[in-house]
Amino acid sequence: MNEVDLTQSSSLTKGYRQEIIGKPDFAYARIQIPANETLMVEASAMATMDTHIQMKTKFKGGFKRFFRGESLFINEFTAKGAPGQIEIAPGPPGDLQHTYLDNQSVFLQASCYVASSGSVESFTKWDGMLKGFFSGMGLFLIKCSGTGDLWFNSFGGIFEIDVKGETVVDNGHIVGFTEGLEYEIGRIGGFKSFFLSGEALVCKFRGEGKVWVQNRQIPSFVGWINPYRRVQRNNYN
Image (cartoon, rainbow, N blue to C red):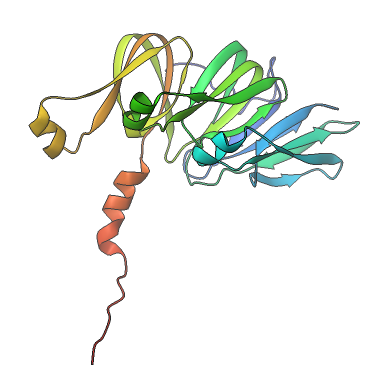
């Protein structure tokens, strides 16, 4: 939790130079792509870019991406001949997180992936029918592996938890976690607490690694705003 925040630094020794602006409510990333290097970006996330950056669209991940709520296509941005700047903006209002993978893997909740350097591979991992259905993270997880930069987003602010032993996280607040952590799905308390407390299923993580959590979740927000929505009334004569 006390790590030095390098996201605003202009002297990163690893990865692309970048900064994240507008945290944690409406974050977007400003990224410097080195000459002739490529940045992989989720479809429709590009906000601005230098004119010499070239874009190529590819069919990525097959229909697994469709089932996890993502576009079937991903855009590749290449800085031809010279470094170039690109700004990317995720779809939902909320935070944006950068992490550098050093021959590591991170699992992300469906639709949290935003961008990665060309050296990082992302693919869909089947989480099993029973475990995936009850985890709150969907039937598929996104596994990002390799050495390079990774950006992912959330609904609400993102906070990092260092796990050493065990920790419990509400399913709806999980954004992602590092490979090597084991997790199981469970509930807090008895059946009365399960149905009446407002706290549903949780994930119990074991091992040593990191879990990224969001401080808001969409179902709770929808439940809060629902009484204020305008309802059209039918008039019968």
